Length: 334
Image (cartoon, rainbow, N blue to C red; front, side):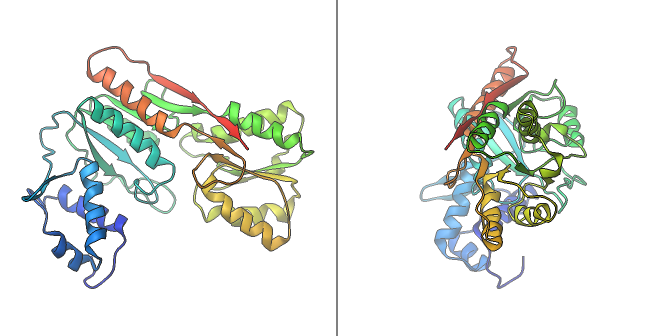
């Protein structure tokens, strides 16, 4: 890391985790004052970063003694939680809640979570060259569905579960959401307000996992049943906050919707900004039910998904037969 630069808390967590993984920190970490000087931040930021690593099971604090690295060699009662995301999982409005539910249940059963972030390129492809798993009793996948990675996990021959996104392999233990109830009610809500041209902004095509299109398929299914589906009103975008506004501009050049369904609440602010720029007042419905949403949205039980994934995994670890999947319903709130 560049000397003299100022780093964000998430960057510090990532860098400290890297140093633990590579053996730079084998037993303990430097004093907080030393780390604060190195990263150019105050001691409070360092303490928050260390607390995140403590919660993740990577570090342990002993009052009056110091902060120590939790051994990852034996894997005794440790569970590796693997996350691919665009920010620190602790700050992520969606995956952070799945994580909280998962680790709460794991800790209840005296399992220790070890967090590993899997990096990806700008196109969302995982960077797997030289990637190494931790030696743990089981794995939990958050937001990772690429077949190559799933196969790598299966090759480990340890119990594993995916939480949140549906994966294409029906034999891979997983917890995911049924979007049809919530999105169906959302579309009927808009139709009941005389909206007939409801546009979709979200993932509408996938090169490796068609299951990621479940929001689009739920939207299409209900509008087809009402005789209102128009493929010209769909604009495919990746789940990045900045992508939605540009996608809406593209859609407006070829079509005139009278309502918008945005597949992620985190993308709605960008859509609203473009609508204001264009002088348009259209109803907007989001999805995921994130805490900051002030618009109608399709809520998903994120914490419950993490808890359910942990329960499935623990059942398998205890040698009992576990279901291969749990499907949680969504609901529309307005």
